[in-house]
Image 1 (cartoon, rainbow, N blue to C red):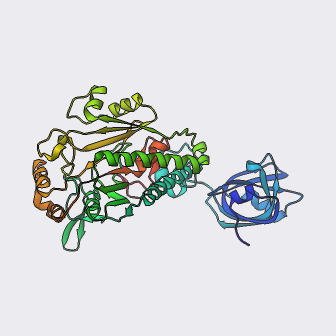
Image 2 (image 1 turned 90 degrees about the horizontal axis):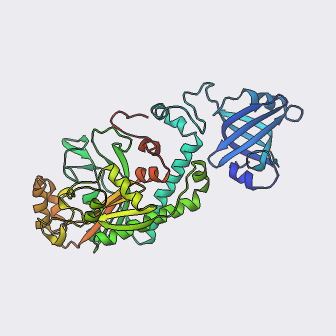
Image 3 (image 1 turned 45 degrees about the vertical axis):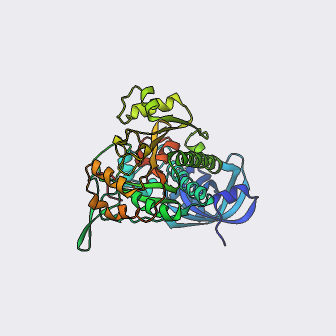
Length: 426
């Protein structure tokens, strides 16, 4: 007999011989009647045993089964307005497929009181919680919508290398690895590679892991993240900011459409955002900052409060605080402003990007100006010597966007298996 998911049973009619499989979510014993709530990835259904109707062996087993055990149940589905979803199953066969220990190491209820570090120690069990499942169903839809959006726009998906020979963005915050007889590093960004590809294939996107060896320990940072990136030829910061606006709106619309139950479970009221565009100088003045400074977290929040339910773009940033590969205004090495931007959503930075330098001589000057050695970027510089168009792009952190949409302050809540300064397992 083919297994049916809980969702299929709940929307179906009364029927004999339903086979359902899942986890024991809850058990209630009222003496002559016993209830077992069975949970699978689609929902929860009530299994009802009656002392005078259900087989004795099944009725006794319903009392002895430990919570979170995996079971297989065959029986008749009948309507019951008092049951979750309005349907219950009267069991005819019950098999324990995988028995759980009697004492669970963490609380797996919807309102778990277990502290996050311990929950992460037992992450495999934490995934049993419906609220955790809801977060990652939403994250799955975010990634799928991102990919779908750019496939539909004719972008090509690329897979950048995750082992590199030198820093992608300058600095020393990289994890070294031994690569045969050479020293290599885990990639801190796909930046240089997506530029190379955009200069021949024009429009590319990717979802890829990156690593940053920064010794921070905050609720906003981890050391391994997934980035959603694009790069476009024949484009500047304005064109790619518009692409960012459109994809975030599309992602939110798809989550609203496909994750209604998850949003309800997490008590999230979500709206498709609008967009507002400000120059860096306008924005920094609005929040009382000084020209040449980055925005503090408090200033980012303040700026978004001034423009509620908006993606707030701040463009034309000072060249001094943007990476070496961001194009300076008017293609002048000593220009005060650049073609770089940031994007804020619900008080948090979700992206930074801009137009890249495609002129080898200018790129070399900017690398030197940032105190870096052009020899370390020789292959990158050379890639623009044989016909490179103007191009631009950006990156969104998958976990960060998930945290914003799911209203989770700690990024570890929205990372399946977080990697930070202290955590390497599970």
